[in-house]
Image 1 (cartoon, each protein chain N blue to C red):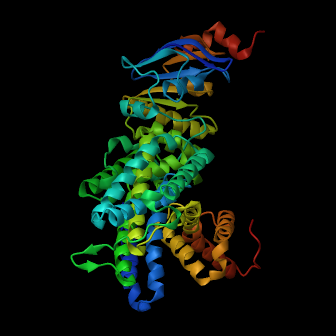
Image 2 (image 1 turned 60 degrees about the vertical axis):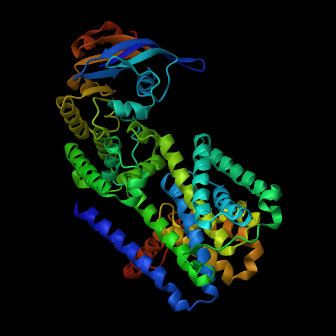
Image 3 (image 1 turned 120 degrees about the vertical axis):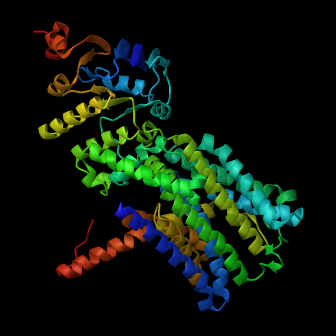
Length: 330
Length: 250
């Protein structure tokens, strides 16, 4: 099949261009504040991609993604700051622990559908958030957990923005590559099949329940890694970074970029991380802005920017070519 | 091949099926007919594990499969299609059939994410098999079309091609001719005969009497949740009870 071989090559090219762009970007910015912001774009890209695997591929909503993000951050933070565990070891422990939690929670939670699933994951997020606040002896409670060490590899300590940039983006690039591969595979097809018709997927022998739990677990593990990276780059964590509005922010990123579009999740993460920096006045109203963006996107560009912009460009081009006065499309 | 033993299904206060028993012989096409609301689709839903029966048993090649979930039945070689076609609309025609090959492949999440060589080989194999099933159903030229954009008749063929990709031993078709024009129905009849000729047992719920009489070697008639009659197409056509059920009492 020429067509598919071609699309595979195209996919590889896309990834290559993206990776090169990511690794050369700091050269153009010559360090400075923007690199610091881009570190967070990287962390949120991992989180948005993780949510997109669940929501975009399998069609299962989660309003509690920040719980996995927070658990990853706190497990890494507490183990390294309080118990002086090696940060890399802590990161692996965090990923495994969150994976196990997601797997166990996944079985009962993912039995639910639609609104009920949204409510259950929302509840999960809130419970974890309360846990971070209330277990003061362990987490430091609302005032946070300071003194988390940086990651280091054989003497190189990731203690500057530029070093953290390369650290975080290495993880982000790998996350993207694995996710792109996964969505083009047998597993990805089965997940998309679940999205479209669960009963038909089951009839064809897809173990829907197990597959949903597996992707929920993968999504949790990626989120936990993002949490560990966050803890070690910022060196201070507090519950506010892992609250309900973070889950909504992640949802907005995925929807802006486009459900099921892995690179779209990067775009969404970039826009939602960079914009507040530009419009500092929004700061206190960010959740309002996310709400409006969500409504506007789902109404006018349900496929997200990655699919919506080419469509818009094509229809504009067609209008220009035909020379007709522009008409409103409903 | 398939033995249905005194199946009863009660929804709340409504008895949809009452003690229905019959067998489906291997390698044959068995038709299940009856007026609307007779309980035919309910029966299919019970056999294919979508509903549990209130009482009764389903045996498949001697094994009690009552209450087995659909995904387990698929692995045992039983697959079905739906009255209102259930396609994966956002996926291409080819991808739809590739999902049908899910049980014929085994790459897990890790092998898929890492694109291990075994996984790539398997992907190539899945694609080739899927294309051959599209050719079997005569819709290979539509391979890269989005399934949601297919005309209804082609969607039916795709659903059958996708089910065949599971390589079943028995396929249950729920009103495959519904909504098809006469030419599409003729194509469908040819396809069903082709499936039977490849050694697969077929059970078909259908309203199109002409089609049923043409392709089925045995027919089971269900009316108001009871089995009314069972026999060859000729016997059924001459059965007084069947004629009464369909035409009403004069």
